[in-house]
Length: 450
Image 1: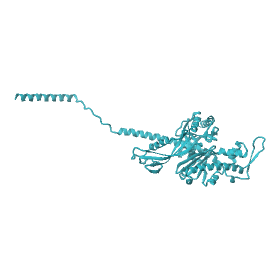
Image 2: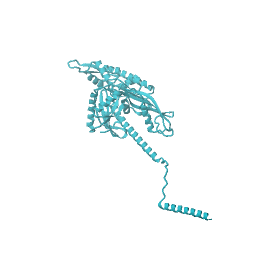
Image 3: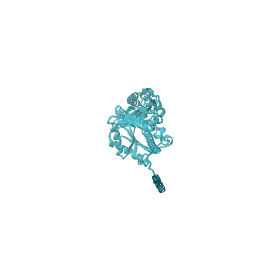
Image 4: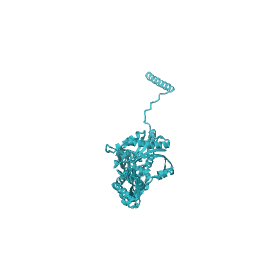
């Protein structure tokens, strides 16, 4: 299946899991997930692909699975990226238009954004996204969309998201090894926000905290604009490791305990309940209380919360987040986690589910924070296709207008050669000339004779 406006594919490459989805857009702005596949991730650490062969093999598994489910053989995919090297740069740029009496067009906006995309950055980095904050037209600020305004100078404030080139290249290599091309590389916190954060929350001000396996992604919004993004190098896997070390058990048992019995708030865990584990063969069974487990989880979660809130403070919008906090990702499924966030930050906190964008047929099993990023990549993929289609249409319309303008321009004046007289006119002219000459000679003769 080739990418079209109807069907698209997306791959979420995470530290602990890799998810592939194929979707079809339906009416009402929803999507119909027609295939999904998930497998463990082996070559990714803290959101960055390190072992290309292992990651490529995992990608091959999920791609083969969804292709088998759909019968489609797609060639291009939308892919997410998020690692601790991702950072946000603020900048401002402008250009003076040829005429201030002409309306600002989509092409003017695209030109300004293109100029910003040439901003010098470190040689080891590449620009991942250029996100306008607001525009200024001839000094008039706080303009959301300048198209249709009259003005000579167009300028804007931008957030430029950059990532390490090697990270993007490794993702691309993994896909190319399996015969796939990257349609677009997208920032995962932005993708998650598309799926689990409402427009009203973005307008009021909200912090999205996506707790994945190896990283925790932060995106701060205010007035419907992305104000700050960051990635911290801790996630759910760090909690699993703490349980393993703290309880002296195997990693697979630690992960099972976290998922089935884990709580993020020690004081809310039942102190009278215990779980009995069969450890290594020949060893005695081990009893672990729910409260002990919860305190281990809480210690690491408090560290993650503190680091996330440090990034929220760096955004400068901590006091303006009236929409509170939305947590998502697999780590958001920990019991009592919203209560811990509220206790530590004083902000209202909820778990973000992507179900509102999924058709009723898929809502039951896909309406989970685990699929928030994958579904967000699908939504951003459709937006990407729409924007590029609109850009092509705008360019086509502009070209048509240029052709029309050229056709309507008056032709340059050129010297028109005089037409030669026709044969009849030639004869008449010669006869007249002969008569005049003869008369002249006759007159002269008469004068001479007199």
